[in-house]
Length: 312
Image (cartoon, rainbow, N blue to C red; front, top):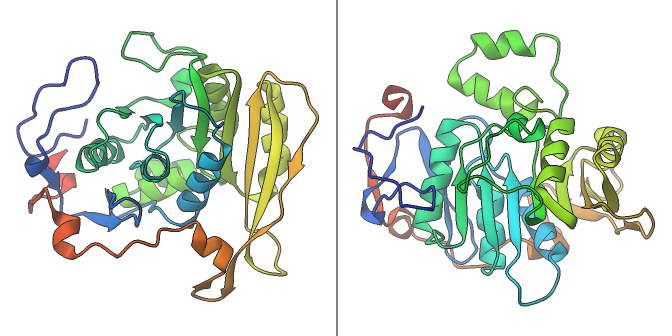
């Protein structure tokens, strides 16, 4: 279990959040902190393995657009949240959301927990260090501090895209922490697509929505698995890196326990006009704030030299 170098502070009762004053939030040598360009939010993340990027930004924007209008606070669950990029970006766009974030990896979970603190989201975001396989198989022992089944309005996920290659498990078992992290992010080693959708179906209310970013070559698998778990596909948007090229990613949405019909095929989103230059439509989905200075990015962080591997 990952433990920061500093002495642990007690858990805040009823929140599942470890109380770390902002001035004592650590940043380890193998971590970076990014400016999310939304509401001055920042993101601590490991320097190795999966790093947030376009997929997180585009998924968060699409997910917020999917949220029904109304004054009621919506409950969102981010499945396999990593360091919390999608949840942070959604919270920046729609502060009234209540977002629960589930992540198995200890280091990324700890980054997520600290991101909640440095962005002042303790009242609306809650981290869970759980195995999604347990939720998928309904094996988890329910307590008042666990995600409740049939209680969420929206589930979001940016899952591993590939079925594991023949040698992946061997590479994973023998690999360094960096190699393990890359494999977990890219391939369905810790949890597969069907298990993720089973977990989402268990957590969503009837009529609740799901949205994910994935690869076009998995579309048939996605639709088959969604319908297996009574998650009816409702919309699809393809993402093209450049106009005229085959889609590189898709954003697909659905709802739990509804009849089929009324499927919407959105116009494609072209991300780049030319290398390094986004289209106006894609750029609009990114933040346009004045970049944080280095001192602003590091505000409230105590830099330490002992790295995470040594602190395990």
